Structures are given as structure tokens and as C-alpha cells.
Length: 537
Image 1 (cartoon, rainbow, N blue to C red):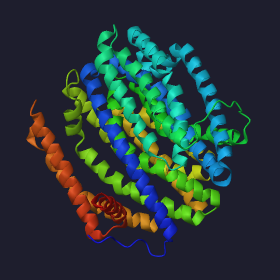
Image 2 (cartoon, rainbow, N blue to C red):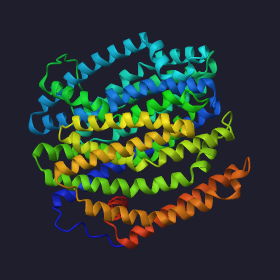
Image 3 (tube, rainbow, N blue to C red):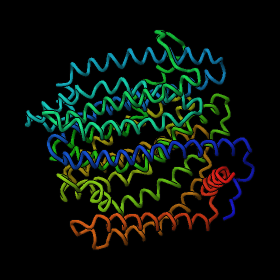
Image 4 (cartoon, one colour):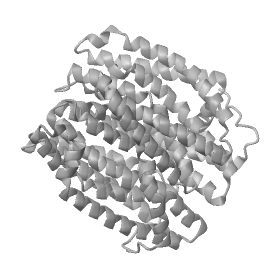
């Protein structure tokens, strides 16, 4: 296949930056894929051990609390606010200035999250009462939720520091260690679930301990990379540092802006607690959505933010527009086919991976319904990640926050309306619709601010993607309708059928893009050729 010609007139510098973004996103995607595979194994272990039991519901409700705080203080607002400021210091000032900013941010962050964690532990009964609203009539489940909340809250300290370390390394274009660190998080949870949990009077407590240990390992794995680049932060309590104050100003509104998805999921968790098994169905449903979203959507957003930030710092808005358009084309190139496949293969996937042990056929049907509703908004979840990165690169965290607030209100209203008709799955659909609303608002504002984002090329690319999804739909529909799925066993045959569906889908999809000579496939294929060329030498 001949490598397609890159868009005419594009400067070589932009081509190199685009390839650098794709290369970084590919490496992050590989690392995330490894983490997601282990995450699937983790979820299979938890589903087999605890199913959709009251203990599982209590765990997933309690886990939502540190997970939300992680998004608010760590992987969401901290990274989005810190990377543009640190990139500016590293680009425009000395390395010593950048290190002092990193150290001041580390000490300030450690102080804040330690205080939040202690307050959370003290207020765990009230937090659990709010999040587990539907547990009020079940004192035993509520008590367990409080205990699990207290055990898992220290996870916030480690994951926040891990996010800061990730921000520094990503700003320095070092993506490997941060990307692979979640692998250890999953390893610790799996190990604790299998070996520690059986030794405890309440086995689910062993899993909660694994969450905290995994967060500590995720932070520790990144320290050697910081030391190698002479950016290992020290204790330097200076909350008045100009860079820290700038990060704080950016971080406050972005607490809502970038974390809208997690806030909406938390709303779903609260309302889902009114349905038996609801928190569990929603958790596993979102886990399947996060597989393609994390591997491709979050990976590309993580890789593109330093590039956008550097372009914004130089005032190169033309380059920023081109990079943003390229990012949107690449995200739709990957996410739309994943969305089609996930919708059609939702029941076989849930059945194959989770329907073991105490996880029943009824649990499979309910989880698959949640997957369907979440998957309808997969393109919006991923697209918002890229669009919000553009706002944050220009140090505008207020606009995404306002848009997110509107989306949160819409999610609450839609959840109340849809849950009465669709049960727990209605909450998933409300989350998807809220993401679409959020994305629509941000696109209109960003388009007006930048004066366009090469929408013609994005639309042409999306049209090619939709044509490429036709063979995916045919292959997945054929496999999903096979009689093998009604048999209780035949796991090897079912695994083979699922592999056939995925294999035919990938071949058909790539074949369509090869026929169209699409630029997106050309960029990916060019990088593969370079890799193969290096191995051949």
C-alpha cells in the first residue's frame, strides 16, 4: 500500500509534531492496553468472587468516592492545570525554575490531599450516606460502605502524587513510565483479591487494601524517571510560588470542567444504588467503555496536550488549529469503529468475560444493556477529551467548567426521567447524552474562538470512517446472532467466534481506508514501517 500524501501545504514542522503526537499516543495506547487487559482480568476475578452481591455493590459505591476525588484532584484538574504552566516554565525559563515549581507543587499538593483524606476518613459516614442513597434501608450494607470508604481514601494521596509525576514526565515528552504505572495498580488489586481477601473476615476488605497498595506502586514507579531527568521534586513548602498560584487559578474551574464524566458517573452511582445490582452493572458497563476510551481517547488527549500547550505558549494559533483538527480526525478514526463493535458485541463480551461464578445470566443482560447506553456516547466521551485539551492549552479552564455545569444539570434531569423507564441502564444513557451536550457546547465556542478547526477535513475523515464501519457491522452482527451464545459452556468456541468477529472487522475496516488512501491510516502505517525498518537493521 502506497503511503498517502499528507495534506498539501502543511509545514514539515507540523507534520513532525503530528507524527510525534501519534507516536506518543501509540506508546501510551500500548501501555494502556496492557493495563486494560489486566483490568479485565481484575474485573473477571472480582465478578467471579463477588458477582452482583451486596458486598460488590458496597465496594463499587465506596470506590466511586476516591475515584471521583482522583479525577477532581489528580488525573483531571491537576494534570490539565499543571502541564501548560510547567511547559511554559520549562520552555521559557531555566531548568532550575521548572524544578522549583515542581517541588513547590508537590509539597502544596501533598499538604492539601492529606488534609482532604483525613477529613474524608472522619466524615466517611456522611459521605457514604450521600453516595449510597439507596442503602439507607440496609444498615449492614451501609456500614460496610463506610468501612470500605475509610480504607480506600488514602489512595487519593498516592494517585494525586502519581498524577503530578505524570504531568512533569509528560511535559518532558517522557510517556512510558506514567503510561505503564497503572499496570501495577491492577496487579496489586488482583493479588490482594486472590490471596489476601480469602484470609479476611470480610473478604471485600482485601480488595480495598489492594486499591491503596496499587496507588502507592503507581506513584513509586515514576520516581526513577524523574530522578533520571533531574526533576525529582523535594519538599519546598511555598504555596505563594507564582507558578503554583497560576496552577491553582487554572485548577479551580477545571475541577468541574474535565471531570464532568466522572461527576455524571457519580450521579449515576447514587441513583443506581436504588436498584439491586445497579452500581455493579454500571461499573462493569463503564469498564468496557473505558477500554477503547482509555487506550485511544485518553492516550491521544494525554499525548496532544503538551504539543498544544507549547503551540499556545508561542502564540502559534494556526499550528494549534491544525494539530487540534488532526487530533479529532485520529480520535474518530479509532473510536467510531470501536463504538460500533462494542454495541453489536456487547452481550457476547459481557457473557464471555464476566458470566462466571456468582455473576448470573441476568447480570449479563443488565450489564449489556448498560454497555449499549454508554456506548452511544463513546464518540462524545473521547471527543470532549481532545476539545477540552485545546481550551486548557490556552489556559482557559472557565469555559469548560461552565459547559460542564450545564451538562451535569442535564445529566441529573435526564437520569431522573430515564431511570423510571430503563432502570439502571437509563442512568448510563443519561450520562452519554450529557457528554453529547457538553461536547456540542464546547465545539461551538472553540470554533468561534479559533475561527475554525479544519472542519472540512474532519467531516471528510468521519465520512470515510462511517463507510469503513460497514464491514465491522456485518461481521459483528453475524457473530452476535450465532447460536453458540445460548449454550452454557463452549468457552473455547465462544472465544474463537469473538476473535473471528474482531479479526474480520479490523481487516475490513483497514481495507476500506486503504482503498480510500486515508491520511489517518497513512500516518499510522508510516510509523509501523519505520518500526519494522528499525527491527530489520
